[in-house]
Length: 310
Image (cartoon, rainbow, N blue to C red; front, side, top):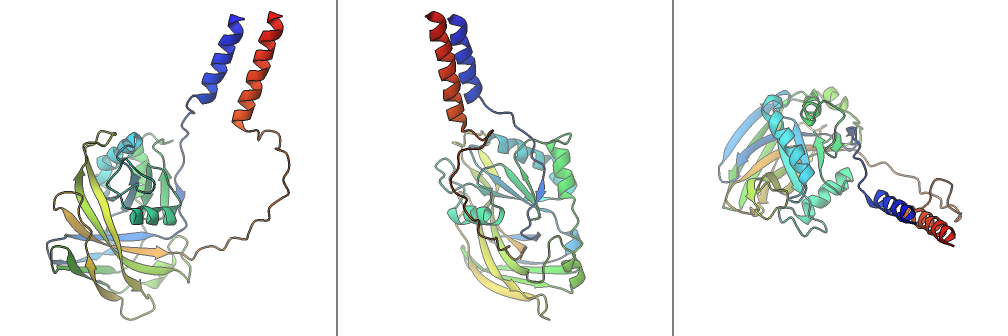
């Protein structure tokens, strides 16, 4: 009798216990590349011209102040940041979120719409390669991230970015792309003639303090506070430039906002054929509902116990 109850307890603990984490390999996003990264402090004017070949890897991190696994991911990126020249941008979870005040619904929705992910940690390199989770098959997260950050998109030409603040919360962003070899654009992963290229201003808070964050960081860096579309760029035009007046979002705390110029390719969305629903049928073998399976197993064990007792 006692042995039977022990078996029941083991079965319950096995059913509700945590599953083993399995390393998820990095995969391509299929939505288009990101590049750029020129930036100025929001309260300072300036002009910068940089060759595309010298620009940093753009690394988007999907995170939350309660996510302990995110700390491992972010520390790994911090460790390789200087050697690889990557540039981090952290999107904090905000949709249905009650524990993290550093995100916004609009920025969170943009990440979901583009990458289809709703749970941190997630890291996206140059908009084209995505790594989900904090488990790796490589020697370490640092080595895996180093390899992913060293992708070379081979885009020719250069970018000029000018930022001119007009008040504490407004300014004018001007951008221009100098001679671009269109064949280098066409060679980008997944490029399609129907692809579109947009210029964006990403507003970033250098560090936001939130001591209540349960993952223990306290100060959260590279927080994306705004993603503002500046305009579409027509690659077949002789004038690859534009200008826009923008309003800055507020910082969470302090006065450490910066304005970053990001170029984003959008690949045409694939049109999926509607699925034809099949008539309702009984579950196939091997597809049983776990809860039902557990209940059935418990019933068998209790029946065995009662039979033995009788």
